[in-house]
Image (tube, rainbow, N blue to C red; front, side, top):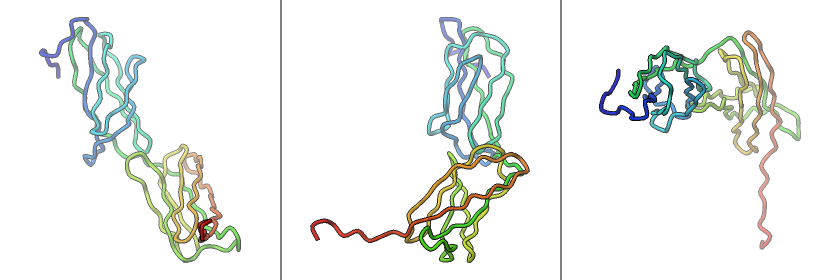
Amino acid sequence: MVNEETSHPNKLSRIRGQVRSTDGRTLQSAVLACQGQETRTLADGTFILNDIPSATCRLSVSLEGFESVSKEVTLREGEETIQDFRLPEASGTAKICGHIFDAESRKPLVSGGTVMLILPVTNRYAHVDENGYYQFDKLPAGKHTIATSIPEYEDKNATQSVKNGETRTLDFFCRPLRAVEPFWG
């Protein structure tokens, strides 16, 4: 779709649009690239790529936790092209799992809690079971940041890389929180 009212006098083209997930959520910080130029989406999922030479080219968008998508677009001299994207959530065949231990006793934490897979849009959560075990499956290949949130224990986080089809174990040793008395008593 070309908008004649926003043509550019310098004869370069402009691409603008919005990036959403397939379920309609706006996606902030997605990276769009075209002809060697890049930009990121704003909080409302919108983007603008200015001063793109006129041509038929590939416009691609990527965001951690989502499948990358690209489209072939034809840019006309001095005109604006509107391109919107819907990104499906990434999935794969990798798995990260492990246990949460008390760092002092070295015993599994059986009191529950949550482990989070940190993603740019919506985190994934796994509950710690009665054996101190957690797992995330159907992960795409790549680096994943995992963080703990266990009542009465310090939070921990770590990054783990996985390949498709791979299962990696990532155990956490959390220290109990200590009541600290202020120096003034």
